[in-house]
Amino acid sequence: MGIVEKFMTMEYGPAPEDPREALAWLDGHGRRFGHFIHGAWQAPAAGSYFETTDPSTGEKLATVAQGSAADVDSAVKAARAALPAWQSFTSHVRARYLYALARQVQNIRAGSRFSKHWITASRFVKAATSIFRW
Picture 1 (cartoon, rainbow, N blue to C red):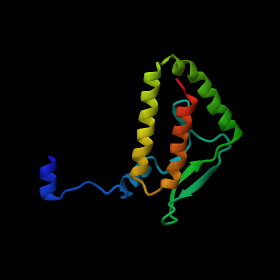
Picture 2 (tube, rainbow, N blue to C red):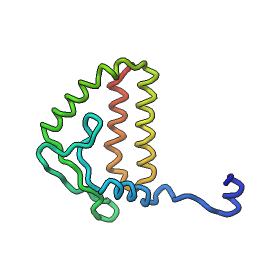
Picture 3 (cartoon, rainbow, N blue to C red):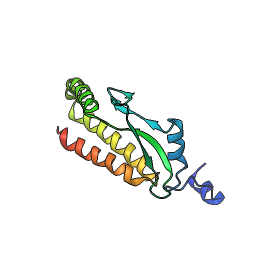
Picture 4 (cartoon, rainbow, N blue to C red):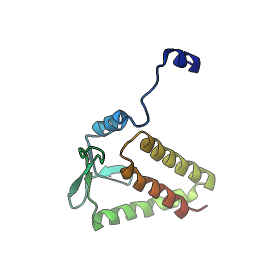
């Protein structure tokens, strides 16, 4: 359907602040998250989790892994192992990966009323782009 047809029928997609897409994504992941280390979701080493809530309603959104020193060590070890492959990419390829990551964070944040949780992610992307200088 083209723009003119959409205008004539007034059929629009969900509003950016509509939480349905974000909630469906959370539901699709069982609303329980570990740490993403070495390309896979990992349970926290200490087995600790905490609940995160929707700041606008106070309702539980998900259960999230609580990191420990062992989790940090595991993530750093995985990052060090991945570094040679990352360094072998040209600056253009690295920039494309970081840009794609930033766009995903922006898309999630734009479609979510849970913006305080995405602020940390966007800060990570900014930090990553300053760390991985070409």
